[in-house]
Structures are given as C-alpha cells and as structure tokens.
Amino acid sequence: MASVSFEELQQDNLAMSVARALALANEAAVTRGTDPSASLISISEESSANGRLWRINYGPRNCVSRRGGDLIVIVDDRAQSVQKVIRGQ
Image (cartoon, rainbow, N blue to C red; front, side):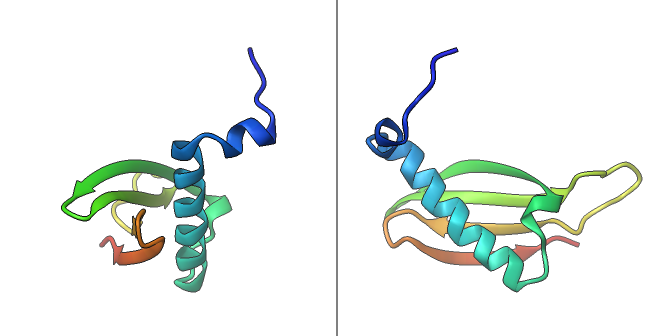
C-alpha cells in the first residue's frame, strides 16, 4: 500500500476540502453535545447551485435496537461554513 506524505496530501484539493468540512462539522457537533469520536461518521457530497456541499452524519456506533438520534451537519465547501444542522428523531 502506497503511503502519502502530508505535503502530497495538501496538494489534493478534494482531500483538503473534506478535511476542512469535517473539522467544521466536528466543532458544530461538539457544540450540540455529540462526541465525534464516539460516533459512526459518514460523509457524502451534495451539489447545489452555489457549488459543493458536504453532508456529515454522526450516528451511534451501536445502532442495534435504536432509532433516530443522528446529527447531520451540512457544510458549504465554497463559504467554508456550516449551512445547516439537523437533529434526527
């Protein structure tokens, strides 16, 4: 498996975009009482008229017999800001 240096990683615009979005979403999650390190995190890309949005979902690691409770953070890639936070039921 090939290794990637930090300098090479910084040259990858997509990787850096995801990293910035995750850092912003983690901050929003902690502010709302969700511990990112205790969550199962998924990231998906959404498109909008203004560019790319990242949808970052924080769910429970042990989801057996549990419904809802996810935290979803939408991050605007261009503005580098949290656009919306949704708490699942």
